[in-house]
Length: 17
Image (cartoon, rainbow, N blue to C red; front, top):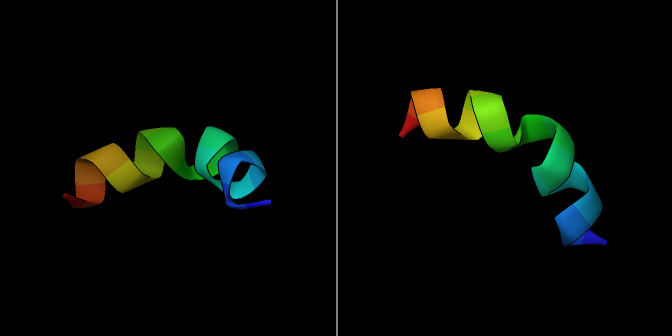
């Protein structure tokens, strides 16, 4: 489940980090 969200937010998550 989280993988699915991560796939979409992967880009945003990386920038946020």
